[in-house]
Length: 441
Image (cartoon, rainbow, N blue to C red; front, side, top):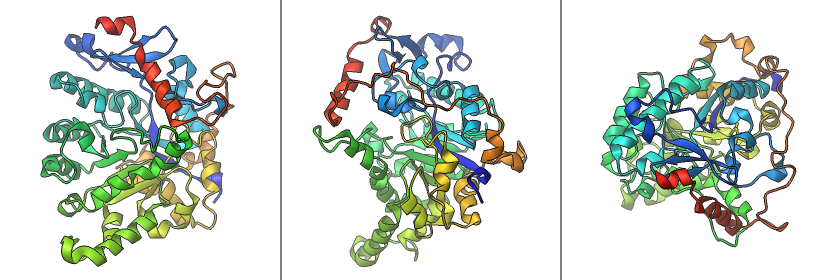
């Protein structure tokens, strides 16, 4: 097999929602209350919802930029590659990158709809959440059938409402829902609570995968304000290990043995030791902790229920059978700063030396298609799904990096290593001034 022969399904990408997303999905009586885009005096575009301001953080949409211009500064739509927010350009960028299908997490509402969950008016929250899901399923994914895996946001504030929404979107063909790595960060019951049982049951009944993305709790985690920002960037994927342990030792996987949970953008290299440690803990401590996996080892339960994904993880690929070859998927992470666009086939293939064609197919597309109830080959002949075939459909897409700031890198570190404090201060400054329109709303 060659890089050109890969069939790529990415289970973790992101959409920067377009300005017009609510126009067709909110009834007239609610349109005046829908989130809207406002341009600030500094030229950045921000979402305004119920008097709150949500910025487009730079690192969320730097694909196609010169790396020296990466940063956390807020941006306008004109500073982004159109594929970030324009569905037609997104598919062209997918073709240019040789990617067949994509699952896209939300941006301005938060990775699991936290913006809606924090609203006091839950009727307003539910109307806008439903509108968001309808836009995502019908418009973003529905415009190009067979090219996207729909991902819904949950009514996070109410497990029964969340269950109802899972069932509603499943009837529309959506079998993935985003969830938080730590419900307590939203003042909600933990995953150990029976309160979530209606939600878990709805996901089981509808064959819906629960996707838990890094940072879907309280956001970025910092060790120190003085630490280089590289510390946060290095540890963020592995930070999902706490959520993984919570789930593995919880009652959820025992009571709902067919449930499927995806740890999104968490990488895989750390998993073999994690599973080794979990089995050791169970063996040495079950006599007094009373953990009972019904005769199974924790690692066996993991391979039954948990899905993982990676961008660039040669160690994880090497240890794929210790992880569970049938549980591993791949991600592109377009348009975030870790993305391998536009050379994903080549970047991934470089990690696959010595891997059998069967294992390659499982990692690149077969596992994802199975988990997420997707069938791209129903819409497109399989021979036209390879990286080479897709790229042949996009010969005119310019993938060269471009400057969006006139070649001037963001001023955050004064030519010294950028610290966590630099980033926090930059974000705080971006939020300090509300647009006049927002202040009046």
